[in-house]
Image (cartoon, rainbow over all chains, first blue to last red; front, side, top):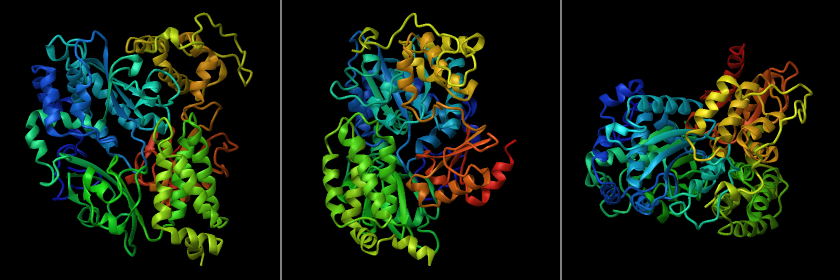
Length: 438
Length: 186
């Protein structure tokens, strides 16, 4: 199968095996493909044993932070007499990222199965899948799958006839990037403005509705049934021999100026150069790659020297000065103006700031104004210091990391493409726009 | 723990909805949450431990039925969920997908964030403005049919440029495809 194009032979298809397969969407088709076997197995196990297997597998959060999933689950204390909640973060809104969308469109039952196993493992009777409002088709498919699974008794008051209650509900967001931040998501779910909360208390202590809560990304939860079916060792083997800290397969969303944009699933540690030129087909005809943002717009921008020597796992990206993040890989070619694109990213963060922290509200707005001024040919050499100073004031000083995320591309840009900034300032216009007009 | 008592000032058990009061367009507000809608909301209320948690879904119901969320509708939602109109408005204004004013019959959202931007998304937005005769972003066309806005990342970056027309999500739109897309709309 494969979507939007046939899989490359060097991919390792676990999560994306049925992308593009219409029969996998419904319950019958999903059962024929091995669906809900892992849930049945899980419900016969002790929750602590499930947590143990997930810990052993090395699975880490696929939403961006890369926190070990089994460890996160182990923070939920069984028998504390409180209702526990699982929240599945399906707010996928980090620019460059579109992997959870395909999981939900093509294999909605895989996510429900992961949610049900996760709920049982952390002692939760209720799981909310928070999906961004713009994902109309994934929402429809998830809602239909929840109805099917509930009607079949897989989830609900008597999940798979075990007498255990596992409710899974879909909750629709309403347009706010910040609601992908876990504490903002919980506020949004409670019917509030999506402002992030100060931590502590951490969600495992006081999360949604003030109760112990675990928040996991779609891809993280969708990987869990495979780990239960095949074992922790099977999953651990998907890694490079010298780095046991990143395990499993990883979905990479690839977009921007690249011959074959789309989702790719490769093992942790895959060489980034092969990935970009072989799997993704290299740059568009007649162009060269200039920059890559490997993990969604919030991670540092790589130049090609960094990207072409990087290995695709959590540690491999850090060694080259960036981060794996959400694995939303934005590729930028030599026909693009870095100043313009960084200004556009700053505008994104200014638009999406919830505005409760001063450094973020003011910093994202001023960064945008200055970046757009430079792009328009009206910048000065003093703007470099101003941008870097604002960036420093925006980093590590706010409730959540949206503010930091706005500063990241600006700092990378000034470090690595200072010549492009200077050309705008000295030439008093955008050299790319001038070239296009000539 | 945030119990309902601690959410200070947002609950109003007996807040009355006064007919046309607060309705910007001078027409009486027909209640949304009657009949089938009321049943749907009651079912939703069983899924959450608080009434407030159904606020976003309730606002979606209003917008689906009325096309936008008026102040009178906010007051109705507040009454139904025991929240003050001010609290409801605070939530409505936070989320970009809720319309606080009527919009065109076809609400067109073009993603122009960086991944789509490097693939020419601004040209797509310009093509929509031209062919809908809206002229400007956020302005509804004279015939009331179209409103075009630029939207931040729609989460379909590999299919640049994604465009939403009401609830329809269209992938890989180019400026050349825009006239045909508009012709399909009745």
